[in-house]
Image (cartoon, rainbow, N blue to C red):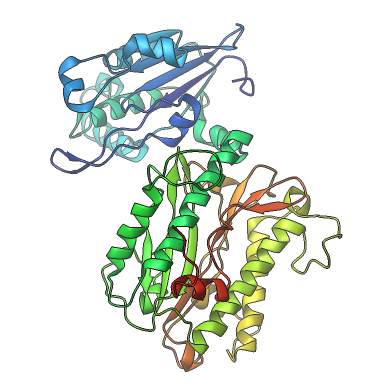
Length: 472
């Protein structure tokens, strides 16, 4: 609140339960910004923060579900209004049912209202429709609250809140998500510890999945095994307990030519002898995501073609990570002063351009005939960016992608190559897809690879796959 101008009010909205079909619900996950600022885990809640001249600098009004014995019998304890004051520091706590009556009064005197509109396109269409159909007949009609078709009380509430916010003068409405993204971009020491914990647990699951995989298994079985190992309580040496509470995203388990599909998430094929398996998966631990990709030979040994292509991608990734960690793709000695991390003044687009050049050089050395003036690598063989921010969400700080990386950011480094069965490319590499991804914490003058525990050197991967290294 200190960073916002005087006269500011923040309207922060929780997530709602999503439904697969009928009344069959998905497991609830709180809206990221709401959880970041409140730590509150219950759906259908709203927090209004008014900037005030007071010791803490703001007044918090907390709208949430009331205690309900019958509902709690089915769904578990509800914090209620008393709990919102006692445990979450609310100055006022009201039932969520009163929100649409109270909210206009809370924001009416504000000069700046920071909020996010959830259903802007639907509301705009509804507003345009009734202006065109009813405005001429009843001028008062266009100033009444907008009601749109929705299936649940949560959806109706969301539309009603959007309607209230959209009736504010446009100059008063400010983008809340942009402000929170700036805060979330830089991780505190506690957040960094949690992200390291998520990465260590996910790296362990990757290692155990390599160890478990065998030809003839299905991609779905490896997905299930990975999720089991992420959730399993284990000692990863950080002094913190418990496994991951959920997966951070739908895993990619892509065997053989399926790896040419960057987001192959159907995971419905049988894994055949001699194929590579690409697993892009990570757990979410205490609210923070991990994002790791490893590619390994299900039979335990890389073929000659798989090995050289894998090493090419690994060389690219190690150079990119070295730039973030030391400031140079080729550090000369351990005594050389570090100039990585924030000091490198690196952006992800700049790192991507470097990765594309590195990959083109590697592929050329393997016999690929690439147009030196074309965009064949970016458009066909490596069509995704080298990395992205990660934190509470899998993809964070996307609106600041062109900014220089700063101390406290966590980013992925994930070059890949996806070779189609195209006569322009050497036949021995056809239908091979490889991606290697790690998370890097940006420090002042260096970087730290959070996912270092997941094997990626060829010798280490083969040793794990062959059972020469046993992790329990």
